[in-house]
Image 1 (cartoon, helix red, strand yellow):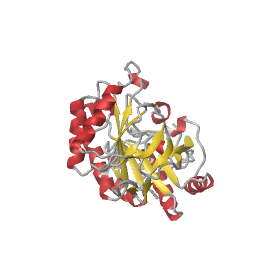
Image 2 (image 1 turned 135 degrees about the horizontal axis):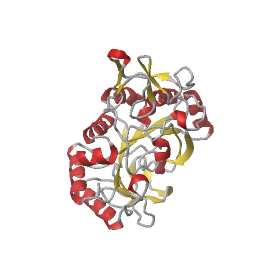
Image 3 (image 1 turned 90 degrees about the horizontal axis):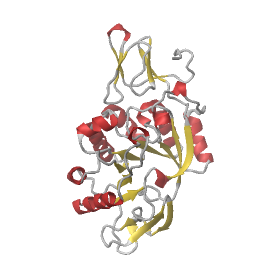
Image 4 (image 1 turned 60 degrees about the vertical axis):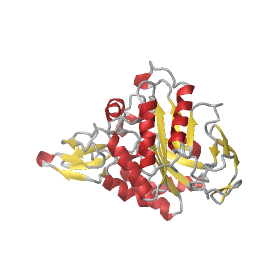
Length: 344
């Protein structure tokens, strides 16, 4: 492992507690790792150097792209626009089905990366004619200091910021970030704590707390639920999740059911059956969720937006492309119903 002196991208980490014998406890996420001298936390981005915790995921993104905002997925936040997207390596989960495992399950020192300070991220976003930045691909929590500094500068420049996250973050860091966040999509992996621990290495309750905190602090929120066969696709679990969402005031929050494809440590599983996704959508809508989508299955037309009142199609999507948008001033052009979202 590189020493902190030789690590160009080290930054003093926020949310740390000094312990005896030069150990440090990280309070960024609910793992609350105790990290000993010279060691990394679970996320592989925070290192203890002489009793101080440093982030080595700062200004060194490993992946940069300009994406359709629908790819995040965000369907009710400036639809049809492009978003400047970036990630560093590392993650605080160990998802068996991770699609980006080659970068999420690695440390910054083990990967090639770009040299891009927060100010340059914002400049690049503006240069690419995008008015928003997404922290995505891996887990933004683990490059928190980079996210925070970039988001703060972005807001000063009028650029929107978006968090695509597993939601496994402690309350204090999240609340400190919320004033500089405009939108988030949180992966609600499943609705059973034992399955959560097995599938991801995390826990359910902190993610539910994140959902409530984001909504309560005015951050536009959408939720993704990947239906993994045998893990998160049972009708009973989906019903329990939807019941919780309704009971906690998330009826207006777009819910994206996403199709699983075999990958990483679950390559032996089949893709999610179309019938399972269709049933999940029916369960959610019957429960009272107003905006329910199906992703990763072209041809099902599960990506269109309908008015929750008159049921007319308002946004027609094919893949990540918006073909038609009939929402005007945040309302349905047919009946005038308010459609939840950030439209202009």
